[in-house]
Structures are given as C-alpha cells and as structure tokens.
Image (tube, rainbow, N blue to C red; front, side, top):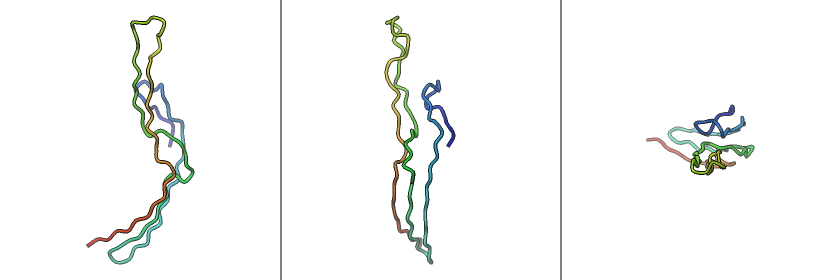
Amino acid sequence: MGGYGLDEGTTADQEAFALVNGRITYKRDNWELFVYARNLGDEGYSNNALDLRYTDFSNPAAPRPAGMILHFPGWPRTFGAGLSASF
C-alpha cells in the first residue's frame, strides 16, 4: 500500500507498508475446507483515523490545534480456518 493521509488536512499520514496474506483451500463436491493467514509480517499500520483536534481561539498562546488524532489499527497477524458447504 502506498502512503495516504488519515485526516482531511493530511496532517496525519500513514507511510507506505506491505501486507502479506494467504489462503489455501481444498474443495470437493459441495464443501470446502480452508486455512488462512492475514498480515504474516505483523506490520503495524493505521486502517483509518478520527481527527479529534480543535483550535482554541480563546488562547492566543496556543495557535496549534489541541486534542488528538485517534488511530484505528489494521489487522494484526491472524490465522484461521473454516469449513463451508453449499446446498
């Protein structure tokens, strides 16, 4: 993934990162069995962000926005398996 801005003013950015996912499936007739892995490199990244900053115009000594940007993390390294059938 290339880098991208997390807020409207692009003051918070997500740097470029790489994710490696995988899935192996065995399918027979009307059922399938699968195992999967997500984010094998356990890359830390923000999936989205919420800008909770505000500008305090009543305090001239604080020209910068106060508050924080709340980051929503992406998936950590995850493994799983599943079984499905269709009728």
